[in-house]
Amino acid sequence: MKISTKGRYGLRTLMDISVHQVHGPVNLNDIAERQGISAKYLWQIVNLLKTAGFVRGTRGPKGGYVLLLNPSEISLLDVIQTLEGPISLVECVDDPAFCNRMANCVAHSVWEEVSQSIRGALRKITLA
Image (cartoon, rainbow, N blue to C red; front, side):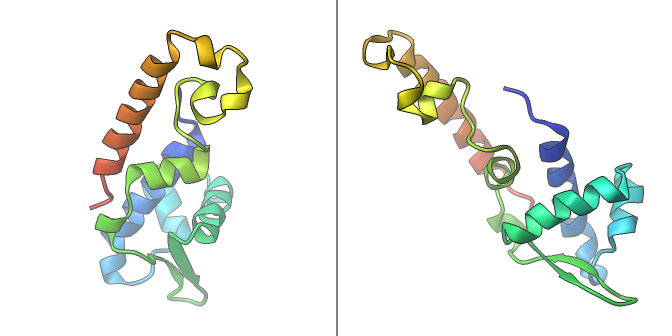
């Protein structure tokens, strides 16, 4: 399992907003500069985060983005699953129809347990 740039940049963006929103909405260009992310790519990521209900944007000279939830209510699992999809090491953990050997697979329970552990660890860590 590997987290893509979309997942990594999305998390960095939310963390940046969390830290800097105490001064008001956080400007996208400021986030891009601080995080070393292309503003164009960041705009795409922020739109996904907005659609998912993590942030709200405001327009105007003092516009920018703020979190819609308290940072302690946003887990890494929430962010990564939103941007990357289900967290599992193998496809059959989330999609039993993926493999016709699942009923007889000796390794399935191992993959399930490891995937659950990863999700549990990501669930415990919040933006706070």
